[in-house]
Amino acid sequence: MNNTKMVTGVTALATLFCSLSYAGTTTIATKYEQTFLENQDYKVKFGIGHVFDNKVSLGFEHQRRWVDEVSGSPELAENLFGIGYTYSLDEANRWSLQPKLEYKFNPGKETARPMLRLNYRVNDDWRVGVRYRYEYQTFSEGGGVRSRVNRFDGYVSYALTDQIGLSWNPSYAYVLGDSGSMYTGEEDRWEHEFTVGYRINPAHALAVTYKRKDEIREDATYNAGDHNDAVQVTYSFRF
Image (tube, rainbow, N blue to C red; front, side, top):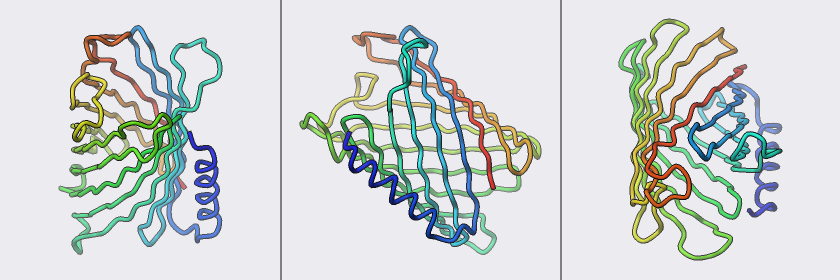
């Protein structure tokens, strides 16, 4: 991973948070995720995001990962930076459009992810949305072909009560040209995320997400032919 670029990015984001007006909303989130099959995967994530009154948003997430429960300190998995904006498309604020750009650093590679999301508030309880995201690997430590991926997401959420919410996020992705393959061994994959959220009060919230993944390729070393699904627990603090 290019450490100089990572440090520069962290410094730039910190400078933005310090120098710009803090008017708006800040959310701090911590997440723990794990899988359950033979080659178990554990991830710890920390994220911070701020939405300014002018609808500009900034975000950063740091992720560490280890493969078994007793392997010591988790290794760096990912640093992710994002900037976006929300356009209201009607006076009632039922329709909104959100362009966003993310840049992520993984060990040995970097990826740019421009995206566009369209949201619609059906009523006070139901919300739906769709998103297109393009992923382009801008740096690979070993050289070679850089992956390019098209991804399409759907979003459905329902407020069961004032405190409990349900959501479903299906996604479909496929590689472009001869730029690699998915973990499925094919050029595409499906994934689904099902979330139950609980808002303790306006500042604190909890969520549990079940991630249903496509089958792993048959010739994989671990978990071949299985759905290596994951569960994620999230706590967020908003102020």
